[in-house]
Length: 395
Image (tube, rainbow, N blue to C red; front, side, top):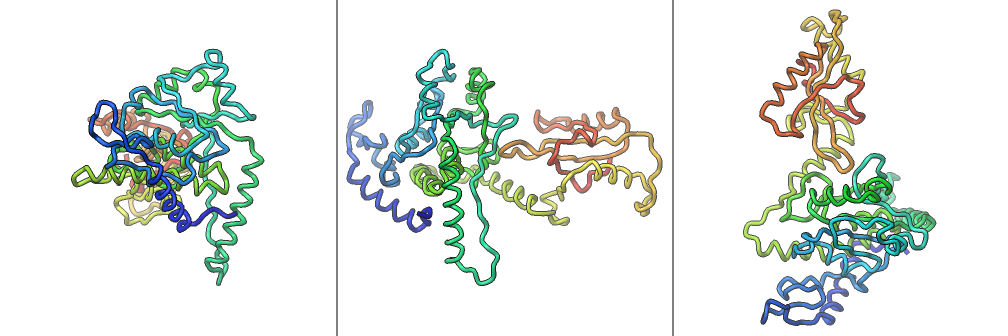
């Protein structure tokens, strides 16, 4: 059957709300006598999220989700790991600041590969595979309305589901903790760091963690990351699974925002960055758009053209440039951090001695923090996918 539409998902959530309301039990929590708590979601009644849990939870998945959670993260009342435990059956949660090695816990590692599963670490790194959800586009055939598009979407999803069922199931290992904690947890495990292939997510939307600031575009809470992974891997069931996971998460955020006066979305800036990135990917930007500084795709040929045009007599850029023995150098900086990597932006290009270019880069970097400074590259060393500013040909 085709994946449920939005109206069906809403209807399922309403049924789940009614079912979970009947299952909810009220009891006191240790250390807080007299305060009524829901023993199902282990939250106070005024913050209970049971009404948003998916019907039939915990849900089954082909993918095995393994969550290594830092001990300090367990103490945070607004973490998303407890919500995942309520929603998913095929999940393992381990608390610790390092992942056990195969020789330390062979039974656990055998469980990870049960049924011929392949293990992957969800973490950026060299050669990481991108998990992209299928995204069919509406047909451009004239007169093909919603009914036609619904049929096509059903066929495409059925094909993806058949393909997904023939692939071996995966074990996805997620690291749950602060960003510094997560980096340390990965580095402390030789098996995670050196032996496991990695995958990275390509989120379909920015984080909904309104009251918790994410460090960069594409960064998500653990629950949102698991939802995006299941969307990409679970074929026909992917959209419904993602909706089922996000419903209690959004309910938790909504309830918490009710206790924060004048709450503001701390990730609004990242949404704007994502929109600009999509606009650049779709085509050249507006040359009059000052907010974009007219970023354009960089290439070695472009660098030499701009450098030579800067040497041509004023008003005669189409003439042969003045001969210069100096090579072309680019002053570059980091752009916005993306999901998989970080953009490199070329800010200045010129034929000049390398010492002159480095001196200029040091002057531009004065007073700037690490990660916001400038450095010098030759055009052939500028990474693929870099952009350049329209005013780059000046040094």
